[in-house]
Image 1 (cartoon, rainbow, N blue to C red):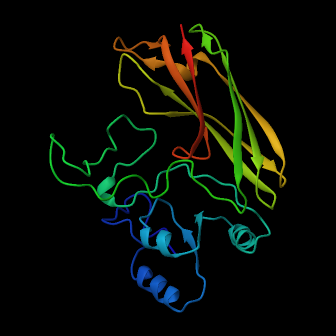
Image 2: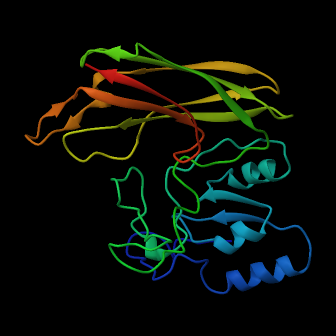
Image 3: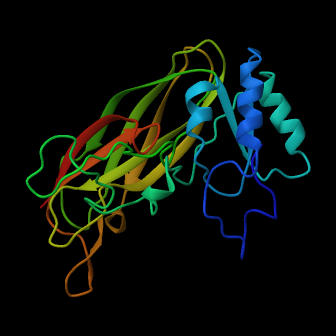
Length: 257
């Protein structure tokens, strides 16, 4: 289910990001039969598929596949291929959350407090993305250990080395895309909460472990200061390693002096 060239693309704006037409009713009718249902989503943009996420055992986001798309989808459905892709966009739960994006500034995605709030009233019941930037599942699972950040203290024009061990803890071969994010803890101007600064896709056999290495250069830590100059400010930074922008498994600080 999903979209085609008549519902997504240039000059094809929609008032909703739900499944077009009566597809949602068809999906619920199929689910009501009691048969297992896997949704193959054909789409050119994020959709608000909350019902499918809650009730269906699996969803394959196929995008707009090319000539070999049918073969690739079938191989994934029947387990001949273990998917390892990650989202390069953010899926919202509601159009009311738009713009919901990555990276984002502090407070820009904040909802109202669920308790008494002296700065306002009301409660936000829809918080966070349905699927965050960098999200993607596999037929296996992965464990992250032994995060190393060296040196712990560095000059503004020096490099920072990052390494982490990733282990396939499941029963089948699979690909994982390890993602490296950076957080500037204190800065002179407002910066993004976190920013993607590296990623690597690796293939692991069951029980296999590999060490992934990254190098953070000064340009990865630069901010545009109040004088409109790119600069690396002294202070505390954090390295965050994980499987998506919200599924952070390990973190470690370092300092620029």
